Length: 466
Image 1 (cartoon, rainbow, N blue to C red):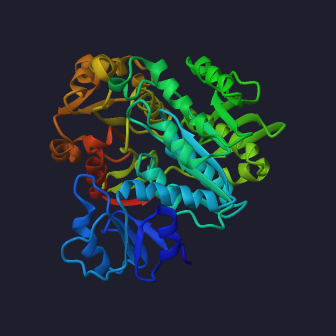
Image 2: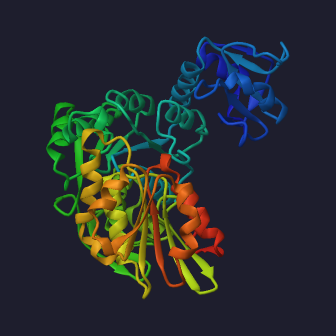
């Protein structure tokens, strides 16, 4: 399927197209580029222009560039623009303008990606659905997702994130959602904000991109709900609230059933029972918010509840695996992609609640971007109720030394500066029957520990990744 022709792309960007090419996708990475893709030569850690020749050699249909790179023929299939980032954004805006899709945008301090994946799973059974891959939620991820959207898309799910003030509103205006959801607000990126209320104001900025008549789906249970409410009122936007205290979409109960959850809630004008293939009350809350989005989009809530039962967490975000060792099976909870105090508390609660007769063991890495409170926020994890149900906590990283010091001595595993340094001790620390959690900010590389545990035996997922 043709996504962009040379003529269309040139008209969208105001750029100069060389050749009469057509592309079926967009890529920013030559390692994963597919034949027929347009390679986007962004400048990040390295200048993407250095990889244009490689992309074309691997079958790229064209490249979006600001100059003809060295080693690339003068007649190569190119789209030449003044600025590649601006060109990508122009493609995204044009793609959004030419589709009649109903669009939902999701932001929040915690749960953006899992909620986005839930929505994609729910909506894909009701129409042609396009969604952001991985965590493509930043200044290049949002326009890339939009520019990749097929013109016959019926539903689109866009994830929007931020690290600093002023980032969300421009991305929301590019996405132009019909529904905007804020999953929650928490102490994340505190080094860039004065307080959590400042984070709430930034999250609320997603409403600035709503289409006329659009709906905001907001968390009623957070302390900063008044900030979200004020923003919706200032913009004269209809808000629908979800949570245990919400009047619109109320979570009535959430109970662990084996390896998953059964939750009851009010939604779609009645009571629904949600089945979720993962433990963790936060998943039930995110699912309820997703159902509110489904209804606001005009889709079928009852069908969405059925589809939700087929969803499961993605790699690095709570997916569960069974590792077979000579001494028995180990249950591995891979939540290694990201971490902040709120998601860490939720993950530890899941670990403590996971059924099984064996020990509960955690490998926890530093949580980044917490500002001047970072040491206290790490040490404070020791006071969580879930810690009582965990036998050993291994700490990774300089900041996690604060947690290690705050833990009762009986619960201390080891402390290591890096994930690599923790690897040699895995075989001695883990045995058959154990339930093991790995969680930390992505920069800490807890995925190495996950892979190290997998290598101890033959890994088999107990749930399909959505």
